[in-house]
Image (cartoon, rainbow, N blue to C red; front, side, top):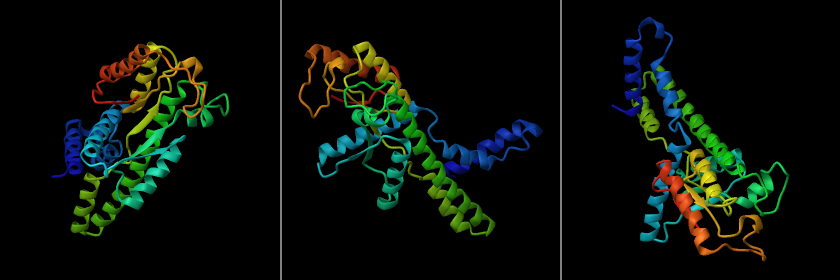
Length: 259
């Protein structure tokens, strides 16, 4: 028995236990909604994608030809359309990530208007964009599964059991559009405590990988330009530890830090 069918049976039993008050509840509709909402929280996404990233890193260590690609995004719709296109073209989202760059957030997502890459944008813009991206990616899943459900209805109504079984198999093995996001926290937007608090928000929104640099937050410059002022080694290490502690506190033990 498949996962989709298991959900139908479970809801049928729950409906029977609640008597006539639940007569209007259709167990198959509930099973479909559950399939379309595989990830209930950002932390579930963070743990799921951290596992993917760690696996991909191990595969790359063993074979450097098996590399990943990270695509820059600055809006949920852009990320969604990129992943939909990738899945249609390649048949899979494997080894494809999204990259949330600090300079793109500064240039395109700040309430102050377009800004240079100097950490002058609102620090909460980053976790907000992570949440937005995963909302759009989950919507892509729901849309794709909805088409499978419609095709399943048609097959069942036509009495085509073989086609129905094949569609149920596709539903159970559906590959999500949710992929790892590498999220830029710039220089942490403050001291180690500020870095920790912002990292928590980013992880709770779904980030499994946080990129941090060793510049002085108040003097942050674009990494490709002159004039950068770096912090002492011990100060930077305290920020890296702050990000790791945020991952550990939230239960995403294998979260990735790019430093």
